[in-house]
Amino acid sequence: MKTVAMCIVVGMLVLGAPGQTRQVRRPSLVDDVLERPVQGSDLEYFTTTDAFYSSLDQTRSPGGMVRIMNCEDDKLKRPWRPSGSSLRQVLDAIVIADPRYQWQTQDDVINLLPIAGEPALLKIRIDEFHAKEITSGREALRHLLVLAEVRKGMEELHLKPGVALINSLSSFRPSSFSVHCKGVTLRQALNAIAHAEGSAIWDYVEIHCNGRDEVVIRF
Image (cartoon, rainbow, N blue to C red; front, side):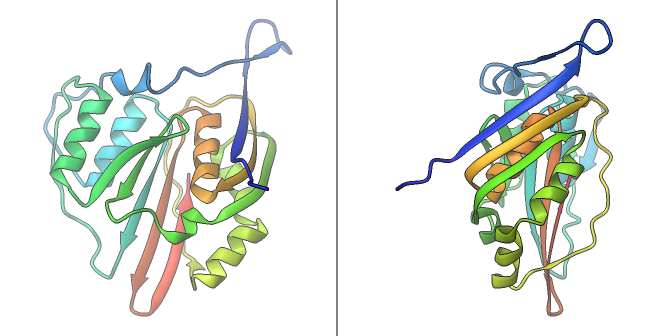
């Protein structure tokens, strides 16, 4: 029997009097987020991933980005001045300037991926993932990374956990949210977490250098 991929996310915001909550439906990216303006009239120089992160952070858009790194860290910076262009236009400009990357949406979340495709670890299948009444993407990630499928995938791919530095994310978060996924890939589970938190951005980094094969996943 074919397994159907499904994620259910529930976000809760405190509204009205204390103790009163109601579920809030988030707008579709197709109808809203990709048309939001990205501000910034000053010329700045960013790496591709920094420009992607800044664009999503400014528009409070959920997303995720993937980097594959060797011993030479990517320090190439390019001019970046969105000047109120739509997020869609800015993302198109980013990948035109750096053809090593492509952007796409999955389940209303924007992803920046290598043009060669997503890493094998992000493709592993997860039977079920359930994080209930959590308050941050980092908290949900801790539940996700201890799943047997994830640990087995890292072992089979000979990847060890690297050192993760904590990103500074936008301040808006629901007071609590839950994520329940069945029959999804690791990338879909990460996207479900980002969407449920509202404006979270995950970062996946594979490092292959001097015999080290490591992976860092963080929010």
